[in-house]
Amino acid sequence: MASRRRRKGGVDTSKDIVLATVCSHSSLQIFHGARAEGFRTLGIAIKERPKFYDAFPLGKPDEFLVVDSYEEIQDHAEALREKNVIAVPHGSFVEYLGPEKFAKLDIPTFGNRKVLAWESDREKQRAWLLSAGVDMPAKVSSPEEIDRPVFVKYYGAKGGKGAFIAKNQEEFFAGVKRGQSYTIQEYVVGTRYYVHFFYTPLGRGGYRLSKGSLELLGVDRRDEANIDEMYKLGAQETLRHYGLYPTFVVTGNLPVVLRESLLPKVFEMGERVVERSFDLFGGMIGPFCLEGIVTDEMQFKIFEISTRIVAGTNLFIQGSPYSDLIEPGMSTGRRIAREIRLAAKAGRLDDVVT
Ligand code: AMP
Image (cartoon, rainbow, N blue to C red):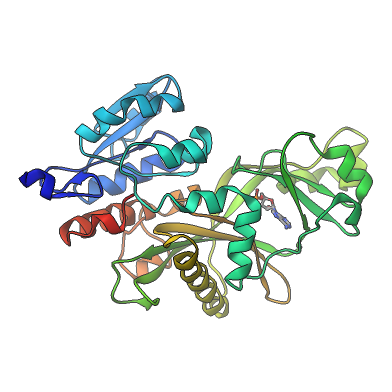
């Protein structure tokens, strides 16, 4: 009875809590941060235990669970619940298991899983951001309406794979893959920024929202192959003759800081997106990333939102120029663990775990 009374969000707060995630993406950082906050950690490895984790003792989980496939994780749900596990989602975990299956995973999970339905469908995502008053690249509703350079992308966060630029209709029809859902946007010229936020429903200080508060933990830019280096070979038009087309596959990340005068705009966007999420699905919790392009008119056009920890936060295991002004040494992975710890202590795990 006592232990049932202490079960919050399916977690027994009278026992040690174990933070678990799939060994990929940002997991070294998540395990490192969880350990710093005093949690035990469990790494779910697909097919085999990754040997390179031995090279990073401070990021290696306390134990591994090896499964044959992402789908098999659900078969271990009961055992994971017995271990008092809270799963921490990241891009690969959600994308490779599939957002629908992740939403149904029978394990207590950090964050509000209702966000998945809004994030994984590009149309719903757009409706959310636009209704929050966020500026986005204009949408081109059909290929016949392409009258300027456009960017074509497929659903799901596959690290930019498959996306392509079309400067006219012919290029669109030559490049598009049939049978996959895609979206067409105006191609925005400017500089890309990936802004890492953290929304805490428990927050009472800092940048206040109608409930809780919003933190800015870092900003990165992605290295994308082959677009970033193609210019060395000459104009893209010429390269087509050799069968070379630009691709947008993320291969790494670089740290950046924004002009300070952009910060009010950045906070305003983050605030609106979180406030709107309260109305739409009860609120987004924890880390999220607004991914956009700043034009030479200083307009911020958001092309995507990621509603969980993004891999660009891996740059800031020891903190960033922004998180250092909140608490030195605070990574996003550690911030997640801190939120779970604070919520457990306050008897409010239900507010951050679903
Ligand atoms: P996404 O799949 O939305 O994450 O986009 C992958 C990459 O494509 C981004 O990191 C940008 O480099 C680029 N990109 C996406 N949307 C646009 C756009 N509307 N205009 C220009 N570049 C874009």
